[in-house]
Length: 362
Image 1 (cartoon, one colour):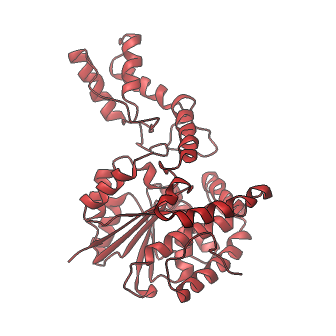
Image 2 (spheres, one colour; image 1 turned 120 degrees about the vertical axis):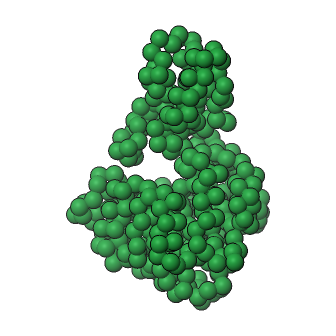
C-alpha cells in the first residue's frame, strides 16, 4: 500500500519507501494496542484513543513532519539524533524510532505524559532512546551533560501553547548542535479563515466557559480563564471596585499570574491600567501560561526564527482523507490537490502548517 498521496514528498524515493514501510508497521502495532490494559493515566488513555480513531492520518502527519525535517539533513538517517518536543503520548517519537533514526529523544514538560509515553511505546515495541521530562532548558542540559549534539527537533501541535516564544527560541539556539534542523507543525494557522474561526471558538470557550475535564491535565485550571484572573486580582486587592476588577481582568487576558499581580499593584499605586489584552481572542491559562491555540502571524514566527539564527520557511499541511464520515472524503482529496498546486499560497487552505528552520553552528 503506497501512502503520502496527500502532499508533496520532500525526500528521495528510497527514504519515502522506508517511511511507507514504517507507517504501515507502526499502524499495525498501535491499531491493536489496548491502552486500557496499561498502567497509564486516564488523560493519556483518552489522548491515545483519539490517535487510534484517526490513526492513518495521524501517522501520515507524523511522517510529513519527519520527512520535512530530514530534507536538509546531510547525515545518514542512522546518524541523526532527533527530539520529539512536547511529545505527549509519543506517537511521533515512536514513528521516528520505527523509521530508524540513530537516536530518538522524547521530551515533554508534563511528568505524567513522560511516564505514560514510555509505557505505551514499550507495549508497541517502539521505545525512544531517552525520555526527558522538562522544558527546553532541561533539554539543553541533557545534551550539554551528555556531551553530544542534537541534529533535529520536531513537534506537532506544541508551539501554539508555549507562553514565551522569544525566550523559547533563544534557548533552542543554545542547544549543542552542528546544524540544528527545526520543524514545528501547528494547527493554529492564522492564514486559513476556517482554522481561525474554529480556533477562536476554542479560545472563547476557555476564556468564558472553562475547560471540559475530558481533555485537561491535572495541572490545568478548568475554570474560565477570565474568572481565574478575577480571583488572582481579588487576592491582591480584595477591596477593588467592581468596575476596576472587570477592567483589569479584561486587560490582562494573555498574562500569567505574576504579571497580573504586577498590573494590580500598578493600579493600586497609580489608579491606571498599564497593560493591554492579547491580540484577537488569544488567551492563556494564567497559572501555567499554556496558550489556548495561540494564533500568531507567520511574519512574527519568521522574525523569531531569523533573530535567533535560523532560516525560515513555511510548508502547507493537508487534510485527512479517511474520515469516518465518508462523504467528507469526497472533498478532502480535492482540497489537498489544490493546496499542492497553490504552493506557498496553500497555507490559506491548509488545516495546519509546518514552520521550518535550519541553524548552522561552528
